[in-house]
Image (cartoon, rainbow, N blue to C red; front, side):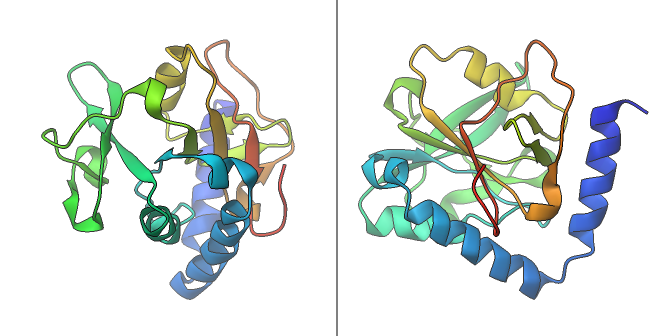
Length: 186
């Protein structure tokens, strides 16, 4: 089995073993850490992700961003081109089930141009100590970030059980700038 595939299997299995109350409590701790970071405070436009049961929840970050007057964008998968497009979302009920049954904005929601997004909160199945990430395997975020002309801050959210010592890196992989777990920042 390819190393990234083995990491996906192991970390997803560990996350499935978490009770929802534990997942919620750890997500709250991660969110509190992010809310105290200077890049969060300075950001006028934040890109979040719609969390699944295997990821750190982002609802608290969404609510705090909106109450602070930040513009919030969520990704939508363009299945025809295999690309992410970020759209503005003002209320969580504006998200609908999309590709892979993940909540995403509708195609009609206003597009957030890459140049306007100050901070990306990035999901991952696993991260290593050098801030490399293993995603779900579609390469959506790596392709998106390869088009970046400015270098916005990228923060990966993970449960501590999703941190591994090392991930083999492919040439197209884009690391995040910071990983925040319920125990530490990497």
